[in-house]
Amino acid sequence: MNSLRRIPTPLPMHFTWASRPRLYGVFAWPEQISVLREALGTPRTNLHVLRGPGGVALLDSIGMRGGLLARLHRFLQGMTDERSEITLYRQALEQGLLVVLVDMPRDDAVTKARLRWAFQQAGASSVHYYGRFVNEALTI
Image (cartoon, rainbow, N blue to C red; front, side, top):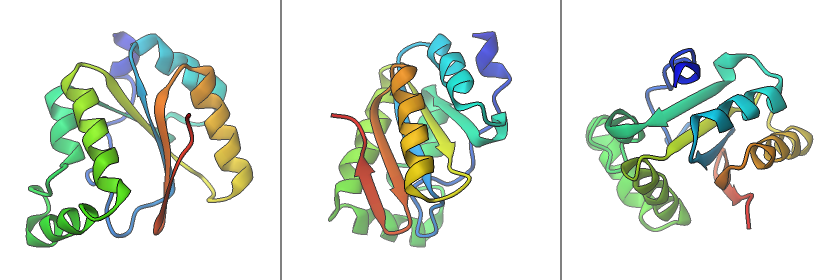
């Protein structure tokens, strides 16, 4: 568990109008995050971990933290695949799993493929790419 304490606090908002390119994935064990970090070879500031009730609150699946606009955004997401994916991540956190996200330094196919490979090497499940106005499942 000590390896988790060194990872920076996640960014305050997830799945918003101005989302930056990110990969999200679910991990069962903290040791997998160390494997991911090694496979990524990127600074820790690009890697964020959500866990437990605090992670559920940060994920803000119903938009309570961002006021009326955030609730409207979450309502509109209910008409897209993004709602089911947010729910999947919330349920993973409620089951004691870890949700890890990595901010992409560049939004391009090569970077996405490299990050996908790193998530797979570390044993992640439910890996998704989220870019501006697009999301893509990266695991089968």
